[in-house]
Length: 292
Length: 308
Image (cartoon, rainbow over all chains, first blue to last red; front, top):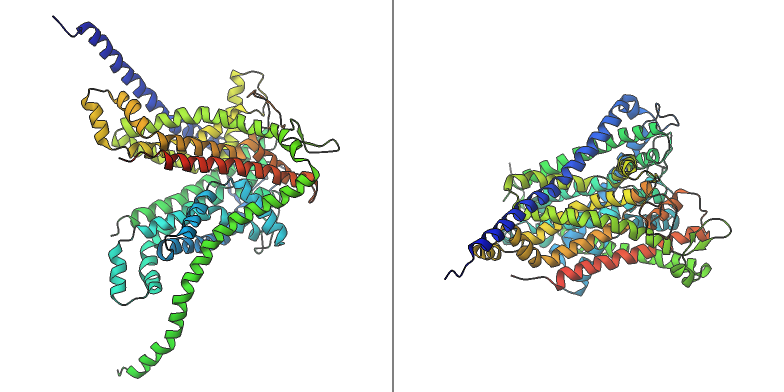
């Protein structure tokens, strides 16, 4: 007697193999969906924006006329914002990371700081905008200035910098510490002469990635009142300012079709800046990973 | 050259004070940095609570949470937050309907099917997608996705919930894909091999063994995605319109909580007016929503974590 019905086995087996093949293709399609979207997005933006992208576009101020509109003030504003945000957020972020990795004892307070940082990372950026508007712009009377914008941005990207700096510090082998202590170095000397030099590339990589997040961020700056139409360059950190994403937002919101093309040109500039920043970060990361 | 040892020792001694000071001051400075992150949280909560209390002194709490009409301008102002919440949820539901299937499927492909070479190409591209500023996505939604949808749905208004919803979903895909893939990759391969040895196909291993084993991480990534969708601002400000409406129709123009906050700060709601304070009440609601989602996500990934 035949215990196994070969016919049934055959049909079930076929079914399983076919569904395996079909689903594999579906999963593959899902995985390349991102590539398709990215291609379409880039193609649209470049085909629309490139004709508007010329030297005049980079050196003109904003204008009511699409042909004359430019992003001089926006680029200057973005540069100012980055220049002020970078040192503040790096000092605070790296300081927090060093505290957590080198000094903090494993107690309730330390766990609270850790939990606090991971929750801050999940707070929507508009809420940071509300904080900046209330505390920096109104309470501390900084007005709608670069300083207020930079402080808001620094707090927004602080969690990212803390986490990446912690990882960079944790990647240092323990024997480096032991060698330093064995030479009679104190804790601070070890941090200053061993930990920081060993972690600096990793910290910079994370810092650049965090800053590239800040340079594309729009909502918090809109809220603290960065302007969208200024025809002057910021003179100091108390000046009013505009940044690239806000200029793009402003052009996108206009009904005239031409301004959408101008917005595309602005997006190209923003994306080029982002690609440059990311390439630097990747370059540093590749160099960094060769150590130890 | 004569080395003056006595002078060297003297120098060393005079530096000692500075060194000892630095040794003491450094931890204090680093602690101060760490405390700033706590101050930020306290600042956020205090800002929201204080201004929200001012708002509730003018508008009854019950009207705020049960009212079905949000019209904060002019004389007959009405502050019922339900339309803003429904708008936010509408966007979130559409976004998750895009992000969950595509994100999970790409995670399964990358973790269970893809060859090393494919993974090496696809993963960086997902990272690039995750790094694109949201304003660019907003522009994409308004100038590309909406016109395309209008070809299919002929009476679709230029501002609607569907187009920004889809684009928010696209924005979240990389996050869900990479978090879910991390969860699946951490399932030990011995379990997979056990299933292969029983004669399972790759699909059966993926769906019946790996996904259930990594379920806590996968669900946590979905919840985190919901939180991101609720808090997303620029895409909805650009493409969803500014008409708060209690509706479940995705082709309607709606407004989200984030969209309202941006609209008010752009306009000229004078400082101290009820409209001005209303953004804090809305911000508070938004903050509570996203905080709950983030805590839930952390809870799920900790509580239901499978250890192998």
